[in-house]
Image (cartoon, rainbow, N blue to C red; front, side, top):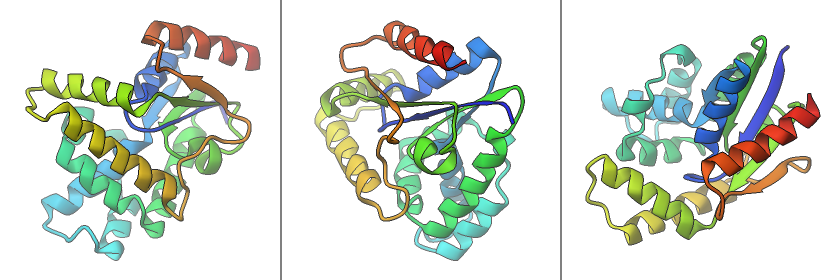
Length: 208
């Protein structure tokens, strides 16, 4: 098994950008585990299957190809909303966690980012980071991204949506969002990506 870096945190905290930078630096494989849930949600939507059909969602999760995840397609807001609803289903989570663990075992190493990497998917990861920021800062970041993509959503709506997603993620019964006991906390509220990257790199180098 290669060197495993687990990066957790709420939406728009900067964990995905950080994970991609780290994976590129070390030549490691990268998996945004949130995309795995989005891919299942998209499959349900495209096939006209109800989002509360747990059995169908679990079947699609078991057959998911992790090599075919298209970030551009799966980043659509509607898919994200649907994904947050199926992500609370235990059978779906179990199927995707198994696939994510297989991915994490790849040589020479892997960087996985999501909500439960350090606590559930890879509890023995070599380095665990919990990346967070205030809801207001995260909403400003997400709002700017959405505007750049042509969205007309208002900041207040984006903030309310983030708060709802945080509540769902943190209060679900199965694998709630929380820092692992041995995770390094990285608050990016006052950090740009370069500062966050330097901090994360120092922690990783110390572990290696």
